[in-house]
Image 1: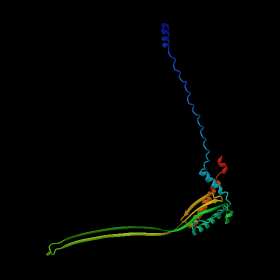
Image 2: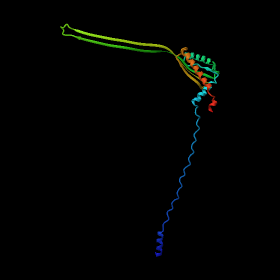
Image 3: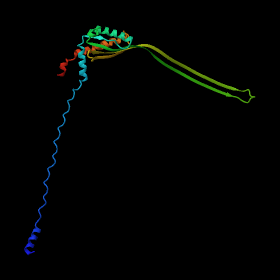
Image 4: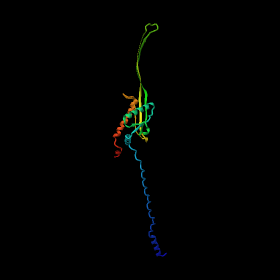
Length: 229
């Protein structure tokens, strides 16, 4: 190799080698677009508040024209209380009491009973006391000097009381039901009798008075169309 070739070879060796080509940077993985959030299903309207439901039922009382008083559950006493309730509703003149169920706008149904029972009461009180004292002296079998002393006391006293009282207790649980089967009014009353009435007449009178009071409330309520303004 000539000196010139040797010098060229050295220069070629001393030149820097080009950097290895780096692969172009890969673009970042594209994230899929976020899925659209599911729309909430339409919720059913909330049930009416208890006050609104009560107002609606009370207003329906004013629409009644004829009411049929159905047979009440509870035996023979229930039939008697039913007759008393019919008499009370007739006097109240809130609506016509009809014996024809097909013409009725609503039906009064439920149960009633007049129970007869005996209430007993027993008590007893007692005081007792007991006491005793005793003393004795003696000698030999040949001695005639013997002394003895004894005393006893007792006190006893007891009182007992037993009473039995016969009572009546009448109950009635009734409701007004429309032809569609909706209960628009109900009440439960009970009575052990009053100064001027027995238990059954008094409980029938309480049913009528409660219905009169609720009719008065219904008449004082605003119209249903005005309650939403």
